[in-house]
Length: 212
Image: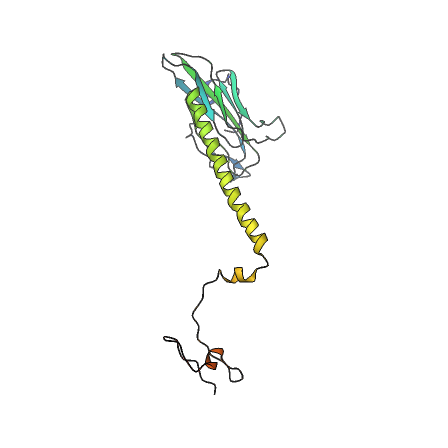
């Protein structure tokens, strides 16, 4: 933690292990208090089988600017990592990035993350590794689902907005939404109850209170 290590760094510079996905708020501190702001570098070693073609990685978002290296090759990034004396620039850019061919070899992934904007930081989403076509189909499904939900909520909101504009002066429409609560007429001595003006009483209706 607390450093953006280059991909050429040896494993001896990674003394801690971390669970991914997860937040680093419990391990970062500023002025003695836990914080989501900071920088960190993660490394993962993957042993690849002999029969693997068109390998890719899918990343949704990490908190909140990041770079992903395969060996010493930069394969994906979002936002901008901080320069010396500066802050990071966050960005949300889900990607499916192809990986260099490495059959039957060891693939070393190095993930650099920086966060100076959000309350929570760290690799809070999974990093998917697999066939490029499968990962691109998964990303397309998520994009279609997000578009459908946004459209559905937008249509519902527009409908209620138009309904309010068309009927905002209709008091009857507003009153009709309230349930009819049962009540008993209890007039004061100086008033006359409207239900007492009739000599007949509907079945099941409580008699009016008498004027005294």
